[in-house]
Length: 250
Image (cartoon, rainbow, N blue to C red; front, top):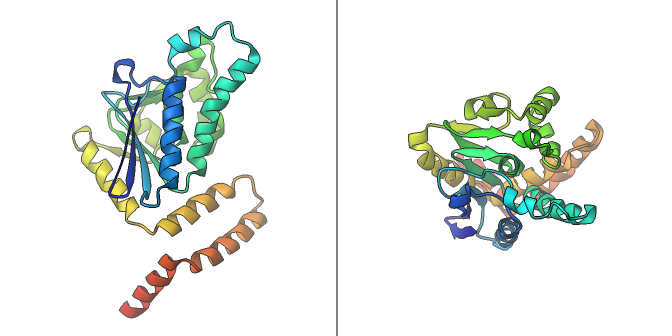
């Protein structure tokens, strides 16, 4: 289901169901959550990288599995949905940046998984979309994340039309961070995560936590939270060493 390893500060989580285009089922989601927990506890980890084995990142939910739950009650469906929702929350609350590297298709729940990551890198031929509406379904939980990434009108259009968009289009609307040429994709991803892993771990962790903590705050509350974040950052060992290096150079 999952390949997990830590190398040079990067925890690598590979969705490993290529024969099913890495479709999400309960076991795969559980494995992702377990890998997130392991990487969060590992002090050597500076970045988490999520990729998909084979030509696609993730095609969404395993519909065969969903079909078997057709007779389930509302509480069963809430439990299933909560399993995925908790994965999204754990990604948001993870102390390190979680990066999706998307090659091929990231559709429906697979697009949701990518969108839930802090940063998204895509090959130029990658495709993104929420086609759930075409089978009478709703990308319900990911709306909370998508709405924070793109404009309200663009989010609604993506959800109610089920439009599949290119990496270039996704980048243009602010849905993803970087688009790399297909032939250079793996090398460019490695360079990106290596550069991110080289940054101050404490500064990156505080920055991620503070940015998301400001969601829903008033302007005044966000500034006040920034005051406390500023003070905490100054007290870290990374900041002390960084200031010393700067003073010596000047």
